[in-house]
Image (cartoon, rainbow, N blue to C red; front, side, top):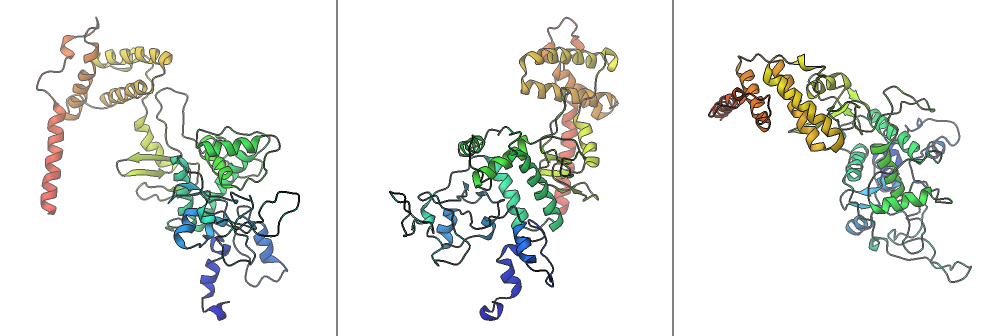
Length: 421
């Protein structure tokens, strides 16, 4: 074909499933493989490939002139991020599969299936429906769109992830999806789009469809695997011998623990000088003003240690009277919190706990210590009517030690910016 068309062999290979070999699919057999059917065996072993047809986004076919994307042959593609619609896998009229891979009519945007007849016989004429005129279900679940965006980045770039790391992420996701598809213990589907729920209910119903590779069922399995999948500890292995990742958020039974986002798609540790690969389902994801970054467990512990309030075993945990008074009031609010279960109140209590911890670790005579204690006096204002409240704890008018600290930092930044200019 290269001699006939003038297209290089590498370009021809990139038009086939060999483009994903070694990353999303298993590595190709060697070119000098002597055994009969080595390439056919490789093709047969790819469980995440549609063997005889392809999914499609009708909006993309309508815009690009009927060109079918290679990634639509992969089960990993269940939605179109650009048009925010789920891919379709069958004709809306005759119900047949789309774009059969064997040679046929050059008009690939026409449904190749046979139209339904009125009797038992199937008519010989093809269906002939225009695939670009069909419409997929809209995707309103932002988390599923984010998952598809991550998967597309792993499949087609930008190639910031090594091929073995891509295989690690997709392999972990594949094993978790197998747990979701298991008929022995069907898992609960989290809240998502209604079309995905209906497809999942039909799959679990007695005599339901066994075709797991349809886009809506793949979306349901991805949703379960990344948000409600089996949560296991690091190093735990399943029956297959592979480590089962914990896809859910990091939670703790102790009240006041900060919940961390799940590392669903792997990544490199963003700590300075580390750059270790963090497999999917391990490590944590921490957010700041620049976005969300992945950290390995060793460096994530240094970050999260500051975000947890320490255990206060009794009234002697604090030596200063105002700190002990605020600690006692927070304990009372925590007891009422168990009855109300207010998330906003829990976050406010945790923030005040962090200020208390910072006060105990800071010398009161320093500028930072004075600023923290001024903040504590401001937090005590709602309890001014308490019988144990002292008037000396009221914040003094015009005294705000933090103001000078903020103004000095802003002045230094302004001078630095002038110098750079």
